[in-house]
Image 1 (cartoon, rainbow, N blue to C red):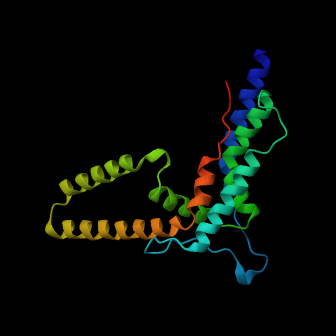
Image 2: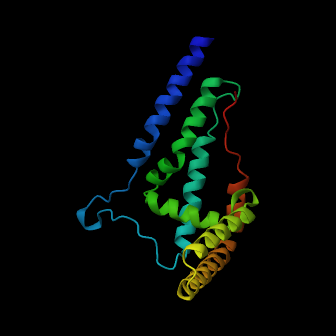
Image 3: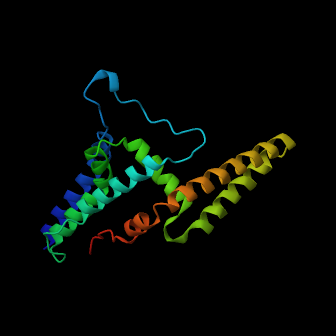
Length: 187
């Protein structure tokens, strides 16, 4: 039994070590030079588009379907290990399969999380933001610095409000994705 655990631990270590390199290789490349991949640059206003939300939903659905694929017993340790490892790269793989830029997908994911933190963590994020603001006040308490921070806060609030309103159109789909359980490895 100890030998099986050592082999499983070695396999997990090797796959985890390889996951960042494997995920880094998932970039969409158009077939012709005219449409060559350009790095994603987030919009200056930080606002999501309907197409970005639809793409986010499609990638999440595909990633969840890949990880939660039926066929293996939940009691089988090898199957559980395989599902856990697939979960490490499922979103990168799904994005690549759908021809979605991984950097853009991650940016959209961050904007969705900003609007709707998982587990109701809005209070935690607000506390972190407030702490960062207070730290900035001590280092730059000039009137100009305060005005710049206030303007940045207003822009962030406007961006979050806009993105929240846009995401409300996709509420049912986003809620369904949030309720889909992620597989967890069993000890």
